[in-house]
Structures are given as C-alpha cells and as structure tokens.
Image 1 (cartoon, protein in one colour):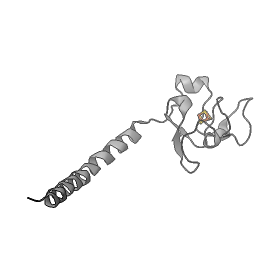
Image 2 (tube, helix red, strand yellow):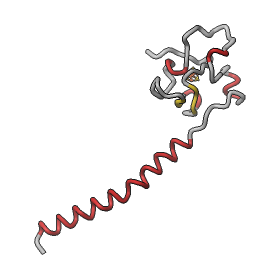
Image 3 (tube, rainbow, N blue to C red):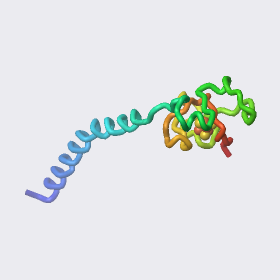
Image 4 (cartoon, helix red, strand yellow):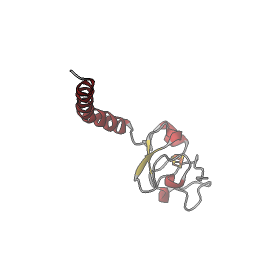
Length: 107
Ligand code: SF4
C-alpha cells in the first residue's frame, strides 16, 4: 500500500473520530453550564452582601441609581444576558438587574 493511501485512510479515520466526538463534547459543555446555580438571595453570603435579583428593590445607603450587576466589573456575561456568573459569588449566577454591596463599576 502506498504512503498516500495510508495517509488518506488515516486522515479519513481521524475525521470520522472527530465528528463522532462532537456530541460528547457538546454534552460536556452543556453540563458545565447547568452546574452553575442562581444565587439564593436568602443564602448567607447573599444576605451579608445585601444581594437582590432586582436592584429596584434595593434599600441600602450605598446604592446609587443605575448600579446593576450587568455593569459591575464582577459580572462575567454580556449585558444582553439575563443571568451571568459573578466572581464574588464563586461563579454562581446573578441577575443582570441585580445588585449587592460589592458592586464596582466596570472600568
Ligand atoms: S459583585 Fe457585582 S455582579 Fe456580583 S452580585 Fe454584586 S453587584 Fe452583582
């Protein structure tokens, strides 16, 4: 068998294996997304940081109008996402319109 036939066969086998692995990879990525939980406003950390899902409900002296999770430097999602990971909460999801006392504007 010539080298070119071998390399073509090897290429085809690798291509088939790669395509076959795609669903498994997608399932793994989806599982990671599901692993993130929404922050419970009644949880101990949320209570200590006065976190709320809706900033319009904030009754705190350090809150200023317009401060929202989606424009906080710790929010790890785009402004169009309704929920996004917050680094202060270990990557758990906070509402884009939420707020807590760790708020810091994006630079
Ligand atoms: S640190 Fe920022 S993004 Fe996280 S909950 Fe507080 S205000 Fe929202």
